[in-house]
Image (tube, rainbow, N blue to C red):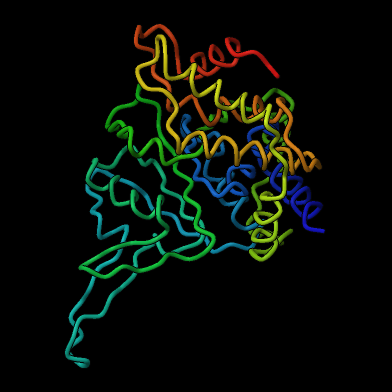
Length: 301
């Protein structure tokens, strides 16, 4: 059965990213649900380590793109070079052609370079010079973002944010985890033994389609959407966001060894799915506080 393999994946990641069991479970939930992940936090708290561990624990091809202010779309997507021997142009694929792509410090690049990811994240393909090229399957973008309090960052446009199923923050490790790091008892792994395979991931995604979402749960999801689209929020949750929320709830339930979704599953993933999409019109609430306000306002079925 596939499910125990993903519990092994979680155990392997938790052995490297200490004290962040909830965040690692959410990251794996996002991958299982077929979404993309945005990690926003200070440098040095383990964002890149989590990305490496997640990719290599599943035996997925991994490439990293360092986003900088001088990055060009061709540096991400690829480019064509004239081949004199062949008498024509030859396409050189960029690092986007990988199963897991780490877009490191994505908000240090200009909006033009950020937009190079839009088609890839939504449609799993890249169109260049009139030719559409499919990306590998699975295709998973993990982007890291520096806080806006730091210098030299560009805000992600709303169309880009909406293509990330989840946004997470890792934060500083707790005292016990930091003690283990400082003592040298735990070191980031240089190599990983995959606990599952890309084929296992495919089977797990197929299993999610069989996780039951009852009519009362669908009513609950629609009530959350309706409340987010009214009142003090500038923008409510889009249909893309709600489809992602339903898929993420199924994924969380599946990892919890259930074949049906309960309200706890929706609540477990809601903030990660909704917080980066909700903006308080009055400016007094953070995205996480907006998500909490929506949850508290809607009755649990």
